[in-house]
Length: 439
Image 1: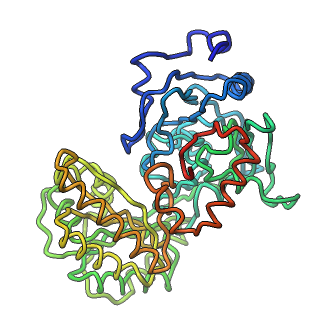
Image 2: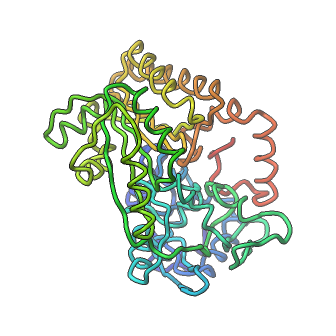
């Protein structure tokens, strides 16, 4: 693509060095032709004009921490890495909003706001590696979703560069915005197929002054689910997590303890001092058949490391972020375990019980062709199971490459066609992240 060097100078990578920017956590993708590092929206506009003229595929990349192949590169494509557009442009304490560039790290923003007594609640698991742009593009969630919602619930407005209209701004700076269609929500979760997000206006909150953590062990998943439902009727925790029996074993090994229970439920409370005290009183007053652990902080820390601990089972992992209605969580976990055992695949389920988001981890050896075949069969069975339970195939990771084949089954052919038509409006040249979400 002639003209790239003129726009970006030394902030261009070609050749073998592009391999570093070819994949996300899925390891799907191939080295792109070129990687560029813009510093401004003006440079992105220049690149977009070049890409439209030359019909070059554009793949936007943040921290590369995605789990669906949304940032996976394509041959002859151009990866736009937004890591250098990492400025916090404005924080309005009285207006309770901030304006940031897409390359701002999620954890960096949270720490920056914390020093000012403010709080950006969404906490995706990879927030030490993810960026705000990527979080918006996938509508990321996390443990705090139960009480605070997903990233999209905090996007008041955003700026983007699209192939069809160039630079645009949707939404605004206010809590309410009802002027025309909700184009902000259309861009949130669009996974880079409509345009390049270049600036985001985020709603923020006053930081909670107090937080308490709790951990409970149960002999059966039914006992744990009964307790979790009692919690939701009594109070609104900021997080309500669960870990299945296979995960409990791994956590025990990680912590060097031997637990005599099978299922783990974790509760986090936050808010003002009197709110946390009130909710703690309600929580501890609930009847249940489990035991309360005396080291909840250590257990929570271990839970956050569980994704990495899984590799002690097998060298490769597929993580699906299924969601089912709350009353079907236990049924799904038990049925998924049965299917995995029948097919000889190691499976660990954990996740966010409060919103029914079950991280279903399939561990395997990519060098074992038979095991890979069984795993693919299991994925198909799990997708059918989720949809039969009125669930969905993705709660926060997105569709990308990994789940694209299942999308028609999940939302219907007409739903896929609507997405295709919307993409044509924003990207009539089909250069934005081609092959992702839809064909």
